Length: 111
Ligand SMILES: [Zn+2]
Image: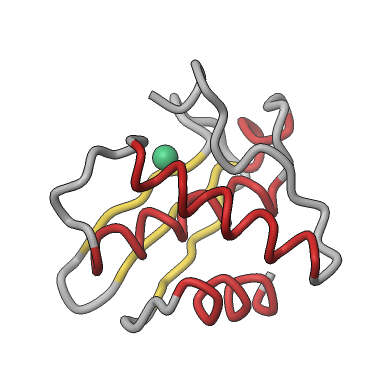
């Protein structure tokens, strides 16, 4: 997980520290992202992710795009064109590195 986080941060150019909390529990969403000003926090819910079509790595990388978005395009829409383009870039880069990542952005699901 640490390697994926480091690779995503490096590919995207995320500058601020990123805190990742993994919980065994269930949530309305697979993951949550929030901006705390001087750092980013991502919370992941394993029980919910197990029932999702996307794997843990994909969900985590998706949330790291939100961290990039907050630093660089704070006024862009959550899953709008800016996010979609960055998701495509990151997905290609991570696949090249050998990660099993698919569907960083899913139309109709990521609203
Ligand atoms: Zn999202």
